[in-house]
Image (cartoon, rainbow, N blue to C red):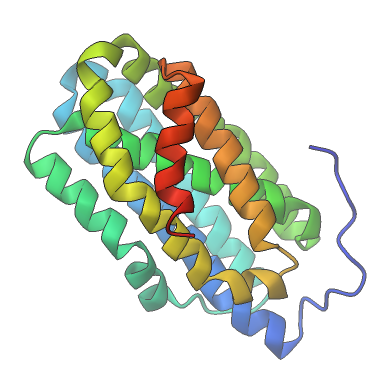
Length: 231
């Protein structure tokens, strides 16, 4: 993605910007915390992949610290309570899947949905970020592709036995993404991030991930429609 200078009309220190940033920054901090916790849980569910999953969890922990620094740089306190509620449904669905030993559901939520959501948001944010946050986010987004790749590789290797559960988990969780995007539409716009661009980038990343795992174009169109119906 080509680098664009931060838009000159964005006032990173205005009260309006800082108010919106308090929620968006909290979402990325909490998102990285969720990812850390999820990879630790996946390491329990997939002991043969434990070392790699622990490595990924540590990367998420570093990302969280980076985004906390972004908030401090703008003197903004993140609204973590808002962010916890924002992720609650995905969090509960992941926990329920883990409790039942449904590794495929957990991988779809963390390695596909959450990672694609993060990749889309970070790519849209980078061109309009302040200089400090841009450098942090550019480093983070490179790592997120690694995390997405873990889920893709594992699910591709187990595609036939995972296919039905993936379709079910997609039906259950993809509509949640659109509710989440709708919830932050106004705050994202204050940061010069348009919802349409977020939706488009997410759908591209998610569709590519499903394709890499083994779904056909027709499958992907059908699965994607569950999200769009809720948009």
